[in-house]
Image (tube, rainbow, N blue to C red; front, side, top):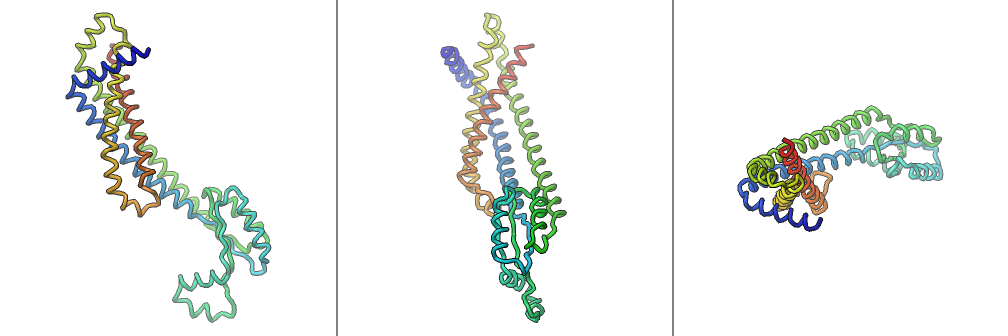
Length: 289
């Protein structure tokens, strides 16, 4: 088995070198397709990070009664933190709420200062792990004696969740379509390389070579094309990512080493995988004629 693999690898390298023009064409096609695919993945990564940031900003705002004691508020905060749907609980005192209102509405300072008491209620601001949990957390708060009212943003949350789900589903659909197009183009490019060596394959069949003996050198040759294309693509992506990283700072995504390593692994796996699959399908369809 090891001897057969070694032989197939030698034959693959010899075929790659002897058919230089088709090998270069297949590798160039692989590079172009992988650059397109990786660029789309980077854009979808940024989109997904932005959507996640929007989800994390969804809050349930509960206004507290002025009669609520400090111990009641602390107990309510503790119970909320223990809920699996809740990621963070923040407390806004009456004074802080007053100052925030004045900062947001400077034109109404005279009106609010003319009131005998601070009209702004203390409140709890609850961040959710998933916006879909808004209804459950809001319903829980409405049943608490220290809560006066819960800000109703259910319609806004539902609309936001719908838009986010559509964007995510659209991104995945686009990625799948582009992936299939990449596979189709590369399979046909490799098929041209196989057809250009039809005489060589026919001679091997005439001397009694098995389908596996013919197929596996081509499969390994496809792996070489995929590996070389992936290495070239990764070499192009790192300077491009470094150039574009300042523009990613406006998004809640780290476009540095972490993303670069993930993209490199995806490109490497995709390149080798498509090269192997494309060669296998091309040779298989030719041998079954």
